[in-house]
Amino acid sequence: MNVILIGYRATGKTSVGRRVAELLGYRFHDTDEIVMKTAGKTIRDIVDEGGWPLFRDMEKGAIASISKGDGWVVALGGGAVLDEENVKQVSGNSLFIWLKADAETVVNRMRKDGNNGSQRPPLTGGGTWKEVAELLRSREEVYRKNANFIVDTAGRSIEELCKEIVRRLRKSEGGGQENREAREPRGR
Image (tube, rainbow, N blue to C red):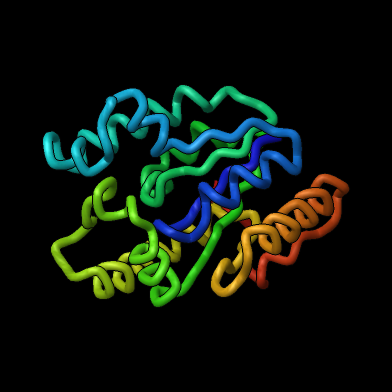
């Protein structure tokens, strides 16, 4: 089984993913890191040179390269699930976990991350707060549709989040019924 972490920027996919992989004895992959390593450039540089379509094409290649793995924790880029083909690539033998945070939490984390501005370009022309609030709202349905379960990361430590995720994964593997906050099953 693979664990696929989805969600907006600065919701903890990379930090939580690394630790969850350690706890489970899985390998960890971050599609943004794969793209940057392959290109030898930051995401900002890729977007500045070729626009978001170039980055999304490279992201699709990164996802395809990890799609056949097993026993992996994968942090998908925040917009990766907007492309159904990406979702289909990694759907087999995978559980999707939506790491969720409110706009205030995301903006605060982005401001504290010294690499955020230098590596990641804005997604829209709006200011940081406006952009985050609008994109969280616009992507919520897609994240919810693809999630097997949701973990709110606001105000919680990485260790606390990882313990919850591992507990829920083990419960899920054991045939236990996961609480998906009364949502419909994933639409795949």
